Amino acid sequence: MKDSAANTPVIDPYLPKNGNFGYRVSRYELELEYQVGANRLSGIATITAVTVTELQSFTLDLSPALSVRKVSVNGEPAGQFSCRGGKLRVKMATKLATGAAMTVVVRYGGAPKPIRSLWGDVGFEELTDGALVAGQPNGAASWFPCDDHPRAKAAFRLQVSSENAYRVIANGKLVSRRARAGHTVWTYEQPEPTSTYLITVQIGRYETTRLARTPVPIAAALPERLRSEFDHDFARQPQMMQLFIDLFGPYPLSTGYTVVVTDDALEIPLEAQGISIFGANHCDGTGDSERLIAHELAHQWFGNSVTARRWRDIWLHEGFACYAEWLWSEHGGGSSADELADHYHRQLQDQPQDLLLTDPGPEDMFDDRVYKRGALTLHALRTRLGDVKFFALLQDWTKRYQHGTAVTEDFTGLAASYSDEPLRPLWQEWLYSTELP
Image (cartoon, rainbow, N blue to C red; front, side, top):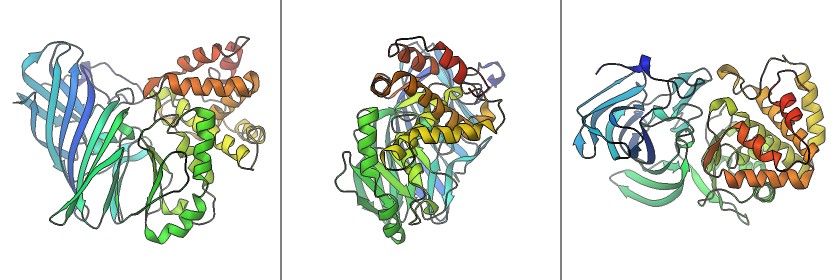
Protein backbone atom coordinates (compact mmCIF):
# COMPACT_ATOMS: atom_id res chain seq x y z
CA MET A 1 0.00 0.00 0.00
CA LYS A 2 1.22 3.50 -0.78
CA ASP A 3 2.17 5.43 2.36
CA SER A 4 0.37 8.77 2.35
CA ALA A 5 1.28 9.66 5.95
CA ALA A 6 3.36 12.62 4.81
CA ASN A 7 0.22 14.25 3.39
CA THR A 8 -2.01 13.46 6.38
CA PRO A 9 -2.96 16.47 8.51
CA VAL A 10 -2.05 16.32 12.20
CA ILE A 11 -4.86 15.97 14.75
CA ASP A 12 -2.80 17.07 17.75
CA PRO A 13 0.70 18.55 17.45
CA TYR A 14 1.59 17.25 20.92
CA LEU A 15 1.22 13.69 19.57
CA PRO A 16 1.46 14.21 15.81
CA LYS A 17 1.40 10.50 14.94
CA ASN A 18 -1.71 9.71 17.00
CA GLY A 19 -5.34 9.77 15.98
CA ASN A 20 -6.96 8.89 12.68
CA PHE A 21 -9.32 10.42 10.15
CA GLY A 22 -12.41 9.33 8.29
CA TYR A 23 -14.45 7.52 10.93
CA ARG A 24 -15.76 7.72 14.48
CA VAL A 25 -15.63 4.68 16.78
CA SER A 26 -18.60 4.00 19.08
CA ARG A 27 -17.53 0.65 20.58
CA TYR A 28 -14.55 -1.66 20.97
CA GLU A 29 -14.94 -5.34 21.81
CA LEU A 30 -11.64 -6.98 22.74
CA GLU A 31 -11.19 -10.75 23.10
CA LEU A 32 -7.72 -11.26 24.53
CA GLU A 33 -5.62 -14.12 25.82
CA TYR A 34 -2.49 -13.32 27.77
CA GLN A 35 0.21 -15.75 28.92
CA VAL A 36 1.98 -14.17 31.87
CA GLY A 37 5.22 -16.18 31.89
CA ALA A 38 5.74 -15.96 28.13
CA ASN A 39 4.41 -12.40 27.76
CA ARG A 40 2.31 -13.45 24.77
CA LEU A 41 -0.86 -11.66 23.79
CA SER A 42 -3.31 -12.82 21.15
CA GLY A 43 -6.45 -10.90 20.41
CA ILE A 44 -9.47 -10.18 18.30
CA ALA A 45 -10.58 -6.55 18.24
CA THR A 46 -14.05 -5.78 16.89
CA ILE A 47 -14.41 -2.06 16.26
CA THR A 48 -17.81 -0.53 15.55
CA ALA A 49 -17.62 2.82 13.79
CA VAL A 50 -19.34 5.14 11.36
CA THR A 51 -17.65 6.93 8.48
CA VAL A 52 -17.56 10.73 8.57
CA THR A 53 -16.47 11.01 4.96
CA GLU A 54 -16.41 8.82 1.87
CA LEU A 55 -13.86 6.17 2.72
CA GLN A 56 -11.91 3.44 0.98
CA SER A 57 -8.83 3.32 3.19
CA PHE A 58 -8.23 4.15 6.83
CA THR A 59 -5.72 3.70 9.63
CA LEU A 60 -5.69 2.54 13.24
CA ASP A 61 -2.96 3.11 15.83
CA LEU A 62 -1.11 -0.12 16.67
CA SER A 63 2.33 -0.85 18.13
CA PRO A 64 4.97 -2.37 15.82
CA ALA A 65 5.50 -5.02 18.54
CA LEU A 66 2.18 -6.60 17.52
CA SER A 67 1.55 -8.29 14.19
CA VAL A 68 -1.78 -8.48 12.38
CA ARG A 69 -2.91 -11.76 10.87
CA LYS A 70 -6.27 -10.84 9.39
CA VAL A 71 -8.53 -7.82 8.88
CA SER A 72 -12.13 -7.74 7.75
CA VAL A 73 -14.53 -4.85 7.22
CA ASN A 74 -18.30 -5.45 7.35
CA GLY A 75 -17.68 -9.19 7.07
CA GLU A 76 -15.48 -8.97 3.98
CA PRO A 77 -11.70 -9.51 3.98
CA ALA A 78 -9.80 -6.24 3.63
CA GLY A 79 -8.44 -5.69 0.16
CA GLN A 80 -5.03 -4.86 1.59
CA PHE A 81 -3.54 -4.13 4.98
CA SER A 82 -0.07 -3.35 6.31
CA CYS A 83 1.58 -2.31 9.58
CA ARG A 84 4.36 0.22 9.85
CA GLY A 85 5.24 3.33 11.79
CA GLY A 86 2.75 2.58 14.53
CA LYS A 87 -0.19 2.41 12.10
CA LEU A 88 -2.35 -0.41 10.79
CA ARG A 89 -3.30 0.72 7.28
CA VAL A 90 -6.37 -0.88 5.72
CA LYS A 91 -7.65 -0.55 2.18
CA MET A 92 -11.12 -1.87 1.44
CA ALA A 93 -12.19 -3.54 -1.78
CA THR A 94 -15.13 -1.14 -2.12
CA LYS A 95 -15.70 2.44 -1.04
CA LEU A 96 -17.99 3.30 1.87
CA ALA A 97 -20.28 6.32 1.70
CA THR A 98 -20.32 9.08 4.30
CA GLY A 99 -22.36 7.97 7.32
CA ALA A 100 -21.95 4.28 6.58
CA ALA A 101 -21.70 1.74 9.40
CA MET A 102 -18.30 0.08 9.61
CA THR A 103 -17.43 -3.02 11.63
CA VAL A 104 -13.72 -3.77 11.59
CA VAL A 105 -12.38 -7.07 12.94
CA VAL A 106 -8.62 -7.31 13.53
CA ARG A 107 -6.89 -10.56 14.55
CA TYR A 108 -3.47 -9.85 15.98
CA GLY A 109 -0.87 -10.89 18.54
CA GLY A 110 2.69 -10.75 19.73
CA ALA A 111 4.84 -9.86 22.74
CA PRO A 112 3.41 -6.55 23.98
CA LYS A 113 5.77 -3.93 25.33
CA PRO A 114 5.56 -0.26 26.26
CA ILE A 115 5.72 2.43 23.62
CA ARG A 116 8.73 4.74 23.88
CA SER A 117 7.68 8.35 24.28
CA LEU A 118 8.90 11.76 25.39
CA TRP A 119 7.56 10.87 28.84
CA GLY A 120 9.16 7.45 29.18
CA ASP A 121 7.68 4.04 28.43
CA VAL A 122 3.86 3.98 28.34
CA GLY A 123 1.29 1.27 27.73
CA PHE A 124 1.41 -2.47 28.33
CA GLU A 125 4.14 -3.40 30.79
CA GLU A 126 5.30 -6.65 32.38
CA LEU A 127 5.49 -6.78 36.17
CA THR A 128 7.59 -9.21 38.18
CA ASP A 129 4.57 -11.54 38.23
CA GLY A 130 1.80 -10.09 36.10
CA ALA A 131 1.18 -7.10 33.87
CA LEU A 132 -0.32 -3.64 33.89
CA VAL A 133 -1.39 -1.02 31.36
CA ALA A 134 -0.51 2.62 31.98
CA GLY A 135 -1.89 4.25 28.85
CA GLN A 136 -1.40 8.01 29.30
CA PRO A 137 -0.96 9.62 26.88
CA ASN A 138 -0.39 7.31 23.89
CA GLY A 139 -0.06 3.77 25.26
CA ALA A 140 -3.37 2.20 24.19
CA ALA A 141 -1.91 1.11 20.86
CA SER A 142 0.61 -1.05 22.76
CA TRP A 143 -2.09 -3.68 23.27
CA PHE A 144 -5.01 -3.11 20.88
CA PRO A 145 -5.70 -1.39 17.53
CA CYS A 146 -7.53 1.86 18.14
CA ASP A 147 -8.10 5.50 17.36
CA ASP A 148 -5.77 6.64 20.13
CA HIS A 149 -6.64 10.23 20.92
CA PRO A 150 -8.56 11.55 23.95
CA ARG A 151 -11.27 13.20 21.85
CA ALA A 152 -12.23 9.78 20.42
CA LYS A 153 -14.37 8.28 23.20
CA ALA A 154 -16.18 4.94 22.92
CA ALA A 155 -17.79 2.16 24.95
CA PHE A 156 -15.79 -1.00 25.64
CA ARG A 157 -16.25 -4.71 26.24
CA LEU A 158 -13.08 -6.37 27.52
CA GLN A 159 -12.80 -10.16 27.60
CA VAL A 160 -9.41 -11.28 28.95
CA SER A 161 -8.23 -14.85 29.49
CA SER A 162 -5.21 -15.63 31.66
CA GLU A 163 -3.92 -18.42 33.90
CA ASN A 164 -6.10 -19.35 36.88
CA ALA A 165 -3.52 -18.11 39.40
CA TYR A 166 -4.07 -14.52 38.27
CA ARG A 167 -6.88 -12.07 38.72
CA VAL A 168 -7.71 -9.75 35.84
CA ILE A 169 -8.98 -6.24 36.61
CA ALA A 170 -10.32 -4.08 33.78
CA ASN A 171 -12.61 -1.10 33.33
CA GLY A 172 -16.30 -1.29 34.02
CA LYS A 173 -18.49 -3.97 35.54
CA LEU A 174 -17.37 -7.58 35.78
CA VAL A 175 -20.22 -9.29 33.95
CA SER A 176 -18.83 -12.84 33.80
CA ARG A 177 -16.00 -14.98 35.07
CA ARG A 178 -15.57 -18.54 33.90
CA ALA A 179 -12.76 -21.08 34.24
CA ARG A 180 -11.72 -23.41 31.46
CA ALA A 181 -8.67 -25.65 31.02
CA GLY A 182 -6.36 -23.90 33.46
CA HIS A 183 -7.44 -20.41 32.40
CA THR A 184 -10.08 -17.98 33.63
CA VAL A 185 -11.94 -15.71 31.24
CA TRP A 186 -12.91 -12.34 32.73
CA THR A 187 -15.43 -10.13 30.91
CA TYR A 188 -15.98 -6.46 31.73
CA GLU A 189 -18.42 -3.93 30.28
CA GLN A 190 -17.53 -0.23 30.28
CA PRO A 191 -20.66 1.53 28.98
CA GLU A 192 -19.65 5.16 29.52
CA PRO A 193 -17.76 6.76 26.61
CA THR A 194 -14.07 6.50 27.46
CA SER A 195 -10.83 7.72 25.88
CA THR A 196 -8.58 4.88 24.77
CA TYR A 197 -5.69 5.94 27.02
CA LEU A 198 -7.97 5.41 30.04
CA ILE A 199 -8.70 1.78 29.19
CA THR A 200 -6.59 -0.64 31.20
CA VAL A 201 -6.02 -4.24 32.16
CA GLN A 202 -4.26 -5.24 35.38
CA ILE A 203 -3.12 -8.83 35.89
CA GLY A 204 -1.64 -10.15 39.12
CA ARG A 205 -2.00 -12.48 42.09
CA TYR A 206 -4.51 -10.14 43.68
CA GLU A 207 -6.99 -10.60 46.49
CA THR A 208 -10.06 -8.39 46.31
CA THR A 209 -11.94 -6.60 49.03
CA ARG A 210 -14.81 -4.14 49.12
CA LEU A 211 -14.70 -1.15 51.44
CA ALA A 212 -17.66 -0.84 53.78
CA ARG A 213 -19.91 2.20 54.26
CA THR A 214 -18.96 4.07 51.11
CA PRO A 215 -21.24 6.47 49.19
CA VAL A 216 -20.10 4.82 45.93
CA PRO A 217 -18.97 1.16 45.80
CA ILE A 218 -15.18 1.08 46.29
CA ALA A 219 -13.24 -2.14 45.70
CA ALA A 220 -9.55 -2.91 46.05
CA ALA A 221 -7.29 -5.52 44.45
CA LEU A 222 -3.90 -6.08 46.04
CA PRO A 223 -1.41 -8.73 47.19
CA GLU A 224 -2.49 -10.32 50.45
CA ARG A 225 0.83 -9.31 52.05
CA LEU A 226 -0.14 -5.62 51.81
CA ARG A 227 -3.59 -5.90 53.36
CA SER A 228 -2.81 -4.34 56.76
CA GLU A 229 -0.85 -1.47 55.16
CA PHE A 230 -3.72 -0.88 52.75
CA ASP A 231 -6.27 -0.80 55.57
CA HIS A 232 -4.21 1.97 57.17
CA ASP A 233 -3.09 4.02 54.16
CA PHE A 234 -6.35 3.93 52.18
CA ALA A 235 -8.72 4.10 55.15
CA ARG A 236 -10.06 7.57 54.37
CA GLN A 237 -11.18 6.88 50.80
CA PRO A 238 -14.89 6.83 51.77
CA GLN A 239 -14.57 10.33 53.24
CA MET A 240 -12.66 11.49 50.15
CA MET A 241 -15.38 10.11 47.90
CA GLN A 242 -18.10 11.89 49.91
CA LEU A 243 -16.23 15.19 49.90
CA PHE A 244 -15.64 15.10 46.16
CA ILE A 245 -19.28 14.24 45.49
CA ASP A 246 -20.29 17.19 47.66
CA LEU A 247 -17.89 19.56 45.91
CA PHE A 248 -17.75 18.27 42.31
CA GLY A 249 -21.13 16.61 41.81
CA PRO A 250 -22.23 12.96 41.51
CA TYR A 251 -19.57 10.32 40.89
CA PRO A 252 -19.63 10.04 37.08
CA LEU A 253 -19.59 6.24 36.63
CA SER A 254 -22.29 3.62 37.17
CA THR A 255 -19.79 0.87 38.01
CA GLY A 256 -18.06 2.19 41.12
CA TYR A 257 -14.37 2.72 41.79
CA THR A 258 -11.50 0.23 42.06
CA VAL A 259 -8.02 0.69 43.48
CA VAL A 260 -5.29 -1.70 42.35
CA VAL A 261 -2.03 -2.01 44.31
CA THR A 262 0.65 -3.89 42.40
CA ASP A 263 3.21 -6.13 44.07
CA ASP A 264 5.93 -4.05 42.38
CA ALA A 265 6.96 -0.49 43.15
CA LEU A 266 5.73 2.14 40.66
CA GLU A 267 7.26 5.54 40.05
CA ILE A 268 3.89 7.28 40.13
CA PRO A 269 0.25 6.22 40.55
CA LEU A 270 -1.80 5.98 37.37
CA GLU A 271 -5.39 6.83 36.54
CA ALA A 272 -7.81 4.89 34.35
CA GLN A 273 -11.57 5.08 33.89
CA GLY A 274 -13.03 3.92 37.20
CA ILE A 275 -9.65 2.58 38.36
CA SER A 276 -6.51 3.93 40.02
CA ILE A 277 -3.26 1.95 40.11
CA PHE A 278 -0.71 2.31 42.89
CA GLY A 279 2.60 0.56 43.53
CA ALA A 280 3.54 -1.34 46.67
CA ASN A 281 5.66 1.70 47.58
CA HIS A 282 2.46 3.76 47.87
CA CYS A 283 1.05 1.26 50.38
CA ASP A 284 3.70 1.06 53.09
CA GLY A 285 1.73 1.78 56.26
CA THR A 286 3.01 5.35 56.65
CA GLY A 287 0.04 7.19 55.17
CA ASP A 288 2.43 9.35 53.17
CA SER A 289 0.58 8.74 49.88
CA GLU A 290 -2.79 10.14 50.99
CA ARG A 291 -2.33 13.20 48.78
CA LEU A 292 -1.83 10.91 45.76
CA ILE A 293 -4.87 8.82 46.71
CA ALA A 294 -6.99 11.99 46.63
CA HIS A 295 -5.39 13.12 43.37
CA GLU A 296 -6.17 9.87 41.53
CA LEU A 297 -9.74 9.75 42.81
CA ALA A 298 -10.33 13.33 41.64
CA HIS A 299 -9.30 12.32 38.12
CA GLN A 300 -12.53 10.35 37.82
CA TRP A 301 -14.25 13.74 37.46
CA PHE A 302 -11.42 15.80 35.97
CA GLY A 303 -9.63 14.02 33.15
CA ASN A 304 -11.56 10.76 32.92
CA SER A 305 -15.14 12.01 32.65
CA VAL A 306 -14.40 15.57 31.49
CA THR A 307 -11.41 15.06 29.20
CA ALA A 308 -9.22 17.60 27.46
CA ARG A 309 -9.96 17.53 23.73
CA ARG A 310 -6.33 18.39 23.00
CA TRP A 311 -3.24 17.65 25.07
CA ARG A 312 -2.19 21.29 25.37
CA ASP A 313 -5.10 21.69 27.83
CA ILE A 314 -3.77 19.04 30.20
CA TRP A 315 -4.10 21.53 33.06
CA LEU A 316 -7.84 20.76 32.95
CA HIS A 317 -6.83 17.32 34.27
CA GLU A 318 -3.80 17.91 36.44
CA GLY A 319 -4.47 21.37 37.82
CA PHE A 320 -7.94 20.29 38.93
CA ALA A 321 -6.74 17.00 40.48
CA CYS A 322 -3.93 18.85 42.25
CA TYR A 323 -6.42 21.36 43.64
CA ALA A 324 -8.55 18.45 44.85
CA GLU A 325 -5.52 17.39 46.95
CA TRP A 326 -5.60 20.81 48.62
CA LEU A 327 -9.35 20.62 49.19
CA TRP A 328 -8.96 17.21 50.82
CA SER A 329 -6.13 18.51 53.02
CA GLU A 330 -8.29 21.44 54.06
CA HIS A 331 -11.23 19.16 54.85
CA GLY A 332 -9.19 16.41 56.51
CA GLY A 333 -7.41 18.53 59.10
CA GLY A 334 -4.20 19.27 57.20
CA SER A 335 -2.99 22.53 55.70
CA SER A 336 -5.67 24.80 54.26
CA ALA A 337 -5.92 25.54 50.55
CA ASP A 338 -4.76 29.10 51.35
CA GLU A 339 -1.66 27.79 53.10
CA LEU A 340 -0.86 25.33 50.32
CA ALA A 341 -1.40 28.02 47.68
CA ASP A 342 1.07 30.31 49.48
CA HIS A 343 3.58 27.46 49.82
CA TYR A 344 3.49 26.43 46.16
CA HIS A 345 3.39 30.00 44.90
CA ARG A 346 6.70 30.60 46.68
CA GLN A 347 8.07 27.39 45.15
CA LEU A 348 7.05 28.41 41.64
CA GLN A 349 8.65 31.83 42.07
CA ASP A 350 12.02 30.07 42.32
CA GLN A 351 11.50 28.10 39.10
CA PRO A 352 11.84 29.20 35.46
CA GLN A 353 9.06 31.55 34.36
CA ASP A 354 8.80 30.12 30.86
CA LEU A 355 5.79 27.81 31.01
CA LEU A 356 2.47 28.79 29.42
CA LEU A 357 -0.23 26.86 31.27
CA THR A 358 -2.53 26.57 28.28
CA ASP A 359 0.24 25.47 25.92
CA PRO A 360 3.20 24.10 27.89
CA GLY A 361 4.59 22.14 24.93
CA PRO A 362 4.74 18.36 24.69
CA GLU A 363 8.00 18.06 26.63
CA ASP A 364 6.51 19.92 29.62
CA MET A 365 2.88 18.77 29.56
CA PHE A 366 3.49 16.67 32.70
CA ASP A 367 5.84 19.17 34.33
CA ASP A 368 4.98 19.75 37.99
CA ARG A 369 4.53 23.45 37.22
CA VAL A 370 1.43 22.55 35.16
CA TYR A 371 -0.04 20.83 38.21
CA LYS A 372 0.78 23.52 40.73
CA ARG A 373 0.11 26.57 38.55
CA GLY A 374 -3.16 24.95 37.44
CA ALA A 375 -4.18 24.51 41.07
CA LEU A 376 -3.16 28.08 41.87
CA THR A 377 -5.29 29.31 38.96
CA LEU A 378 -8.31 27.58 40.45
CA HIS A 379 -7.53 28.99 43.89
CA ALA A 380 -7.33 32.50 42.43
CA LEU A 381 -10.70 31.90 40.77
CA ARG A 382 -12.21 30.58 44.01
CA THR A 383 -10.95 33.66 45.85
CA ARG A 384 -12.55 35.89 43.20
CA LEU A 385 -15.91 34.08 43.02
CA GLY A 386 -16.35 32.91 46.60
CA ASP A 387 -17.03 29.33 47.61
CA VAL A 388 -20.72 29.17 46.70
CA LYS A 389 -20.23 30.27 43.09
CA PHE A 390 -16.89 28.46 42.66
CA PHE A 391 -18.20 25.05 43.63
CA ALA A 392 -21.45 25.64 41.71
CA LEU A 393 -19.23 26.28 38.67
CA LEU A 394 -17.29 23.03 39.20
CA GLN A 395 -20.51 21.05 39.48
CA ASP A 396 -21.89 22.71 36.36
CA TRP A 397 -18.62 21.89 34.56
CA THR A 398 -18.65 18.20 35.48
CA LYS A 399 -22.34 17.86 34.58
CA ARG A 400 -22.24 19.80 31.31
CA TYR A 401 -19.21 17.97 29.90
CA GLN A 402 -19.72 14.58 31.56
CA HIS A 403 -18.20 11.78 29.43
CA GLY A 404 -17.28 14.41 26.87
CA THR A 405 -14.31 16.56 25.95
CA ALA A 406 -13.57 20.22 26.47
CA VAL A 407 -10.92 22.91 26.01
CA THR A 408 -9.77 25.78 28.20
CA GLU A 409 -12.07 28.24 26.45
CA ASP A 410 -15.07 26.10 27.43
CA PHE A 411 -14.13 26.47 31.08
CA THR A 412 -13.40 30.18 30.94
CA GLY A 413 -16.62 30.76 29.02
CA LEU A 414 -18.65 28.87 31.61
CA ALA A 415 -16.92 30.66 34.48
CA ALA A 416 -17.97 34.02 33.03
CA SER A 417 -21.59 33.28 33.89
CA TYR A 418 -20.64 32.89 37.56
CA SER A 419 -18.83 36.21 37.89
CA ASP A 420 -20.23 39.71 38.34
CA GLU A 421 -17.08 41.23 36.89
CA PRO A 422 -14.93 40.35 33.87
CA LEU A 423 -12.51 37.50 34.46
CA ARG A 424 -10.34 38.28 31.46
CA PRO A 425 -7.55 39.93 33.54
CA LEU A 426 -7.39 36.84 35.79
CA TRP A 427 -7.17 34.48 32.81
CA GLN A 428 -4.60 36.67 31.11
CA GLU A 429 -2.35 36.54 34.18
CA TRP A 430 -2.74 32.87 35.01
CA LEU A 431 -3.50 31.08 31.74
CA TYR A 432 -2.05 33.17 28.94
CA SER A 433 1.15 34.61 30.45
CA THR A 434 4.36 32.83 31.41
CA GLU A 435 5.25 35.17 34.28
CA LEU A 436 3.81 34.00 37.62
CA PRO A 437 1.25 36.51 38.92
